[in-house]
Length: 426
Ligand code: ADP
Ligand code: MG
Image (cartoon, rainbow, N blue to C red):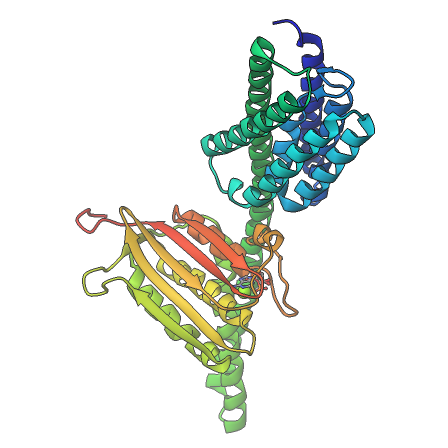
């Protein structure tokens, strides 16, 4: 059983080394607040371990090489998507060719078959949970090794048999399981770090917004008082008219500050029962003029509205603002070409789901990741605050927002909120 020990450890070290470097890189991006890691940088790690594993194999003879190449190959292909998958196939074939021996042909068959399978399956792999991921990758590994061993057994006199073969399978499977778990751990850790940056920024902006709203509200109130006085004192029609315009505009400014900036405070302060059906209707009424102007049709779909009045807990005005922000973005995303804004409301066990989907420009994955970050906007006159506010309101209500989007097709915002049970008293 000790045939491979030294080489095995070295092979495994190559894989661990790559994972370790990846972890360091994630840490560095966090420490220096640089942008999220680009796909191709992450892609370097499996390629490097793949190359090292093949160059320093477990055992080899003049024709065949046995190593842990399938571990980084499968991991890289499944996590990295089809582009990395194709690069890996090219790299693996090149290295195997340079290493020489007749075994190249059987290795090439396996590399191409598993490589293509990886490219196809990677799309589904990323959506799986850990158990399913392990199951899929181990299955691919076993299939890959079995094909390569069968081809070798048919074509060469020297091939792995008995204990050696079993040991080779076990080592590969264990290596793959350990590496997948480590990779998932590193990835979760990096997502947590990104969330931390997001919430730090959010906290700063909330403080800033709260203080600005406070500072600006006072002078506005004072000015309003004086203009009100002028309005009452003067008898000139013209001046009264001007003063009344000024009062209206000041009220509007105060409203904006009250309704908008204060939303940046993450905590929901007032807890009241909210009838979601009613709030959606109110939000639609508010947004209606904008949708008509943009040629957008609003379509409502509420499951059994007679029976289902969905309730939740939070602050009504803030919740309405959140709905308006999301609907407004949906309408704006359709630009002037028009389309349909679909609003669905349904309940599931003790949660309420609101989906707001548009047929607009859509977003890339990077844009989706940045949603909710302060000042992120792609619009010329955008503030990049609407989404941040909406996210913080929903978070304050113990809900979550899930976004799915396809460039050029549209975006779907799904808000999941805890349902308030009617029979319970607040
Ligand atoms: P603003 O609307 O002022 O730009 P938001 O915080 O409301 O700020 O939105 C931030 C960005 O998110 C927008 O600029 C846009 O790029 C993107 N976005 C939000 N909702 C959608 C949507 N429904 N479709 C496409 N892009 C969207
Ligand atoms: Mg907006």
